[in-house]
Length: 299
Image 1 (cartoon, helix red, strand yellow):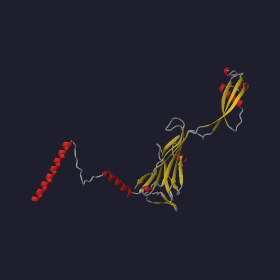
Image 2 (tube, rainbow, N blue to C red):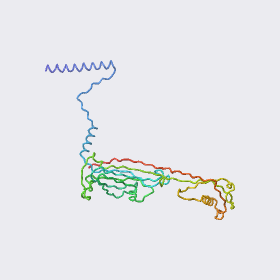
Image 3 (cartoon, helix red, strand yellow):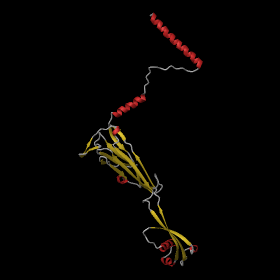
Image 4 (cartoon, one colour):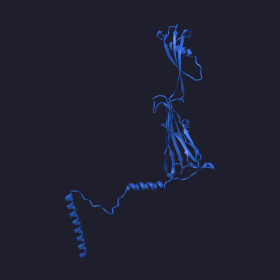
C-alpha cells in the first residue's frame, strides 16, 4: 500500500509540475501550446468507401457496353437553326480491334421521335464498318429537312439472350464470354461530321465581260442616255461552248426593256471589247471528328 501510495504521489506531482510549467509558458508567451496525441487511429471513411467500391467493381463482370454517337443529317436553307445554312452529314466509323468476330446491336433515336428497331451487325475480326446518314434517315419516320439524334451501339457481353461474340463455326450461336472493365473497350468508335454550304463541289467559273454600244433604237424604249455610250455587261460562260455575244446582249435588252422580236431586230449594237475572267468558288467546308469512350454496365 505504501509503494502504491508513493507512486500515485509521484504521478500527481509530475502532472502538477507539467501543468505549472504549461501555465507558466502560456503566461510568458501568450500562446496556446498543444501536446501531440500518440497511438491514435483516424478513420478514413472516404478511402474505405472508394476501396469498397473498387472491390465490388472488381467482383462484377461487364454486362453491356454501349456507345452513343450523336448524328446530324440534312440541309438548312435559312436562319431557321439550330446550325448555319448548309448541308450536314455524319459518318460513324466502327473498328473491331479483336482477332475474333463481334456482334453489335444498333438503333436510331431521333430527337423527340420514337426509337427505331434494333439492327444486328457482325464485325469480322480486325475489320471496320460505318453508319452514315444514308443508313440513318430511312429508319426515321416523319423526317424533316434537318434530323438530329443519337445512334445507340450496344455490345451485350453476357447475361443476355444475344451474346456479343458469335461462334465462327455457327453464326446463329453466340459464345458468352465474361470480361472485366479493362477489356471492355473491344471496338473503336469515331464520329466524323461534315458541313458544306455549297450544294456542289467548288469549281471554276468563267465570265465574259463585254463593252458594247447601242448605236440606234427605233423603238424608243431604251433611254436616250444609254445610246451611243460604252456600256458593260458580264455573262457566265462554259469553256467548251461557242457564244454569239451580240445575241446574248440583245436577249438581255429584250427582257429588260420588254422589246418585241421586230423591235429587237431593229436595234443596232456594236461590241467594243471583250475580256474573259475565271474565278473559283470558295470551299465553305467544315469537318470535325471525335473518338467515343464506352459506357460500361455491370451485372
